[in-house]
Image (cartoon, rainbow, N blue to C red; front, side):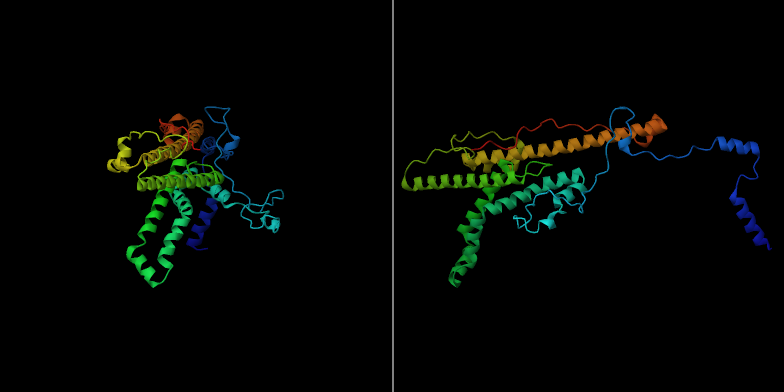
Length: 336
């Protein structure tokens, strides 16, 4: 046995029991100071909060829907092209994409997507309502012989282009004012479809009134009295006073040039947009309030395990979220 073999053999034997050659009194002292055996903490839903023993712990785990589960009693979804029952067996394990997305994203991500995506949804709905004007503009550029196409490109189809842009702008304003896609945290496709159809009705009624006024002026007759764009049975309300913020957004000169009906529509659009932003802030406040309660629960568990000094050092106190003062009431105007 060489020197190296003796060294390695001695180190391997001593590594099996490092306290073998210690004094017995020292070994007894070390055994007394040995920390207790670690026991894993049970899941949060089986615990009670330190401050309120009767309160339930928050649930942090969000289960994803089972895409392999078979639903025998589930009716055919709207995504199926055959509502008469054909291929029904293929839809028994169908899980809508909205359920998968809502189960995998956080509440703040869902709110931000709804908040930021409302503008694009309104634009798409306005384009659908202006499909006829858009088709007329497209025909102006592409239908006809080479002379008609040359004239169209020279004038850029000014008349058809103005009609389409006015339709798109007013339809978007009506959709904004009526609260299209303005309900957060819920899916109201049927309600949004009704709002879209009603916005198209109000737009054509407003255009018919403008055409009647134009025809009356050409014939030298008095113009028909203006009515509310949201209720034809009521006269148009007086122009409201705008605050400084709205004046900057619209422009004071543009506001003065608007007709009474345009002022009513623009003002209601601003009000509904403000209510929508307020609703978004309320949802965000409720989310941060839940996070604050969860933080207090975690801090209470740490204080119970390590004491108040160490527990609050690991997870310090956080200021509670401040609620919004101006809570909106209602969404959109009442129309007939």
